[in-house]
Amino acid sequence: MKVLVADKFEQVGIDGLKALGCEVIYDAAAGPKMGEVVGAVDPDILVVRSSKVPGAALEKASRLKVIIRAGAGVDNIDVPAATSRRIQVCNCQGMNAVAVAELAMGLLICCDRRIPDQCVELKNGKWNKKAFAKGKGLKGMTLGVIGVGAIGQEVIKRAVAFGMDVVVWSRSITAQHAQALNARLGGNTTPDLIELAKTCDAITVHLPAAPSTNKLFGKQFFDAMKPGAYFINTSRGSLVDEAALREAVQNKGTRAGLDVYENQPAETEAPMDNATAKLAGVYTTHHVGASTDQAQLAVAQEVVRIVQVYKEKGKVDNSVNP
Image (cartoon, rainbow, N blue to C red; front, side, top):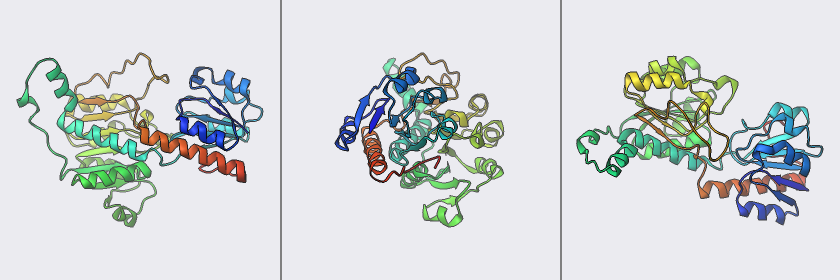
């Protein structure tokens, strides 16, 4: 069985695939030339991390049966095109949940204590204690957790440890489930989401990219948020109308912590000109929520497990298009 790993991948994962008897072709730079590489290798299994897999690339694969996303979402893969070619697409659910939750909490603390701003002031030789001695403190704040999958649940654990009052929103959650998570149910409809925004001191978003979530957080939502509230997004940039977010930052003192953006480079290094990221009160990272050694090791091990199950049983775990 031939496996093409067309993205950066942990060596332990490559070794694990080889131990299963797979022929492994590793090309971490395949992203910009995905179709060309897929056509040349013609693998049975394709493993990608953040590189895009367009439908045109799949047209060049005659043997491909499984695409594994070494991460949580599959929005970088043309799933309809894969489905039409009877190629199963799967992901590594929950393997990076702790890493993303840790970053979400870090961004939340940055919003409250303005840590990056303080670093800049001190690096520039300026002692300005008075300007920064105004943190609210997270204890006792009401935190709205939007989406209670694996990542949302890990955020809840950490928020509760900080002494926050957690209210959750999900289209599928029940009051009993919320209570079991040490949280309160804030609803499961879009109108409920707007009402939730009115009551929270901070919001953190953990939803997948989908037509139903595209720009879910727009002007109506940000207008409903409390003045000076915090907004954290470590999920996908397509969920947020950044123009509406900028308006809230500029006009009502909203602070934001963002790991993802409406338009961001696909490459690991590229120019980035984002109006939201330039605003004071917006704290930004480079879509690195899942990028810890612990998370990438767990993801690599999950990829090996998925391949092993497929090789032995012909079954694709975590398939999004069964």
